[in-house]
Image 1 (cartoon, rainbow, N blue to C red):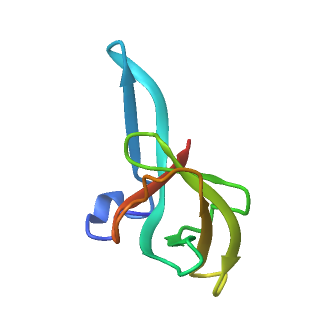
Image 2: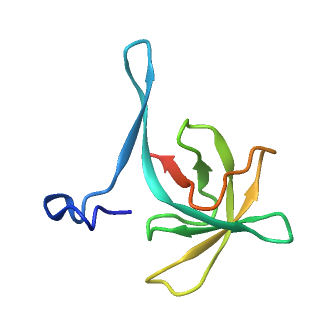
Length: 100
């Protein structure tokens, strides 16, 4: 995801830093946002182009949400079907990340 509303940051990815002991522990790159949970139990996520099948999606705290099982929709604007790996599911609009 990019910063479309901030002209000088347009085209640059968003990053979130996890901290451990006063220094960055890991960098999370924003991958998209949750749209809804399907009847099958999978999460449907609007993702950026860089996310592929097998990618592990994380929440803002760096905890695993699930693994991308398939990509659906047009290549220019893909959606991912994500198999949850935890009972902690995000809500509609929650941002998801990949390890950067």
